[in-house]
Image (tube, rainbow, N blue to C red; front, side, top):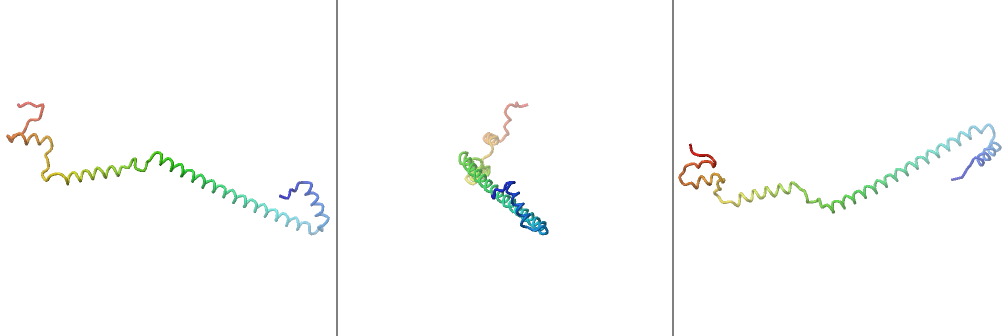
Length: 133
């Protein structure tokens, strides 16, 4: 900022020794050291705040990029309705309920019992594959 190199600092020091009396020199040097320390702390704090703002900006950009990528993936794959087990369960339940309410009042017997009822003699039919003993 001020572009102070070693040569310029030596010239400033010699002028300070000539201009400042020897009894006030320690107090002036202590004050100068404290001011230098404050300026360094302020510069470090400013740099830290600046770096934090840069990190937040990078994180915001990264978050936005990830959200855009996520949206493009969702559009390309179309996962919104591709796999929803609840929709399938609702369809099955609705079909089962509609099937019961739409059926006649007399329930149809299961397939095995229907053959027995059609025998007409009232006797039980032998299971297939077994002979009379």
